[in-house]
Image: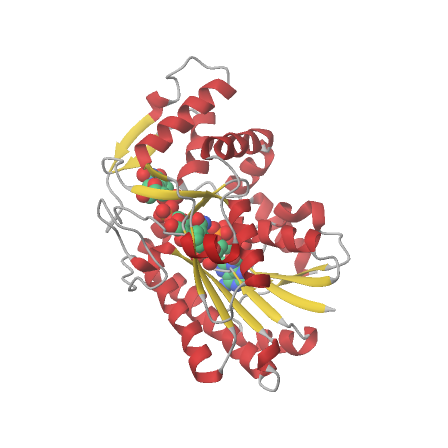
Length: 349
Ligand code: NAD
Ligand code: DAU
């Protein structure tokens, strides 16, 4: 039986990846290793937690000794590494937390993998999930390609770029078989309400201001999270070892436009007068060093692996709003903190 270690599986994207793999590959054992930071919630995996091919491991990737022991104990064949500190604003106020988890944690995982796999490296795989932010910021034109030079500009993107470099260095130095994929902004269920879209959904419901950084003209490319999970599955099973793949939604939006669209959907869903939510929009001080535009050219994964986004953006946004409205308790719990403590206690026994 194959044994895949997925890190960060209790988080936003990781929970969709874990669910997809557990349901699609019943003959493969899936181990979800997660520290359960504020962003990690086992509630995200409630529907599959009893599956025979699923096991949760409560651990911190900064703990190198524990990782070595886990590789010996569970004999993982491959790793899909998503665990990270993921929020740019937090990286500006606490960069070291990002160095610890994203850089040191990734190197710890690489070391544990190479040590455990050294006699049979050809049959193993280390798949690192990364971001388009490593390529820096675009002007009005152009796209990020797989060979675009790295130019990270925030502590978050610098930490992700560093971890990408380490993964490639381990391929070159120790012949570790790897994939790296760099994806644009994900949206969908389970995203912590500090990121733009779930923050605005939560704030509309509570009649709180919708903070728009600067003029709101920064541009992001948005992809529904399940489409990202499908891309990861495809790369994992059909990608060419050693390659990098860019993943994106072919779907660029100015922040102010996406928030206005979201407001219109919220008004309709909450049976409010049109324009009610938009009145909450509040322009605030810009994010320090705010990248202007991200845009992925995803033609490589499209032409080589046949992947493309499955959802139209407005359809995905409606689904996302519906999920948050139907899961008010999830939203209340993650914002109150009590939820986190409950699961920590449960898994520390
Ligand atoms: P998230 O913040 O929602 O989840 C991160 C998960 O990692 C959480 O479950 C958290 O508990 C866990 N974690 C954090 N530190 C850990 C540690 N030291 N040890 C073990 N587990 C730890 O993040 P996300 O948005 O789901 O992003 C997942 C990955 O995808 C990250 O590597 C991120 O850089 C990358 N990514 C995210 C996006 C996006 O739009 N969200 C886009 C491209 C790439
Ligand atoms: O591009 C991929 C990246 O997308 C991922 O690697 C990151 O993990 C993920 O968090 C995301 O980064 P962003 O910084 O683009 O996402 P965020 O939701 O924080 O912000 C989206 C845009 O909205 C960005 O231009 C900043 C702006 N913004 C954000 C917040 C939280 C606001 O205007 N107001 C806000 O309150």
